Image 1 (cartoon, rainbow, N blue to C red):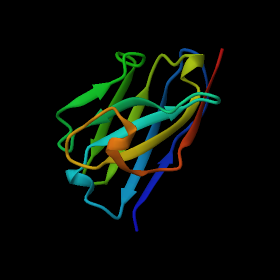
Image 2: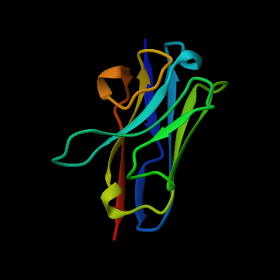
Image 3: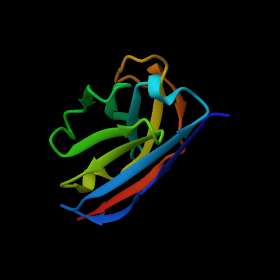
Length: 124
């Protein structure tokens, strides 16, 4: 069965860094666009970043551009999100998702499989 398991979340002070990981199984990871989304309490889920199947193309929300870096290791079926210069407004549950196709999009309906998420809390 399909599994997306996030790890690496936690509590960090503003200005700090954190890397979250997502281990995938049960589908053709190497052919799929992979994305990260986040949802803060009382807010809608929002797109954070995506990476093409090859890793050559990456996409970011304006709010994280220059601070976050998405990467993937197709040999390990794992996608990463390196988060630097964290701000309190980055506090959310971060979830990875597998795209329905090899093309990347920012809309959540374009993603077929979802992980349960990992909590990231940034204190001021």
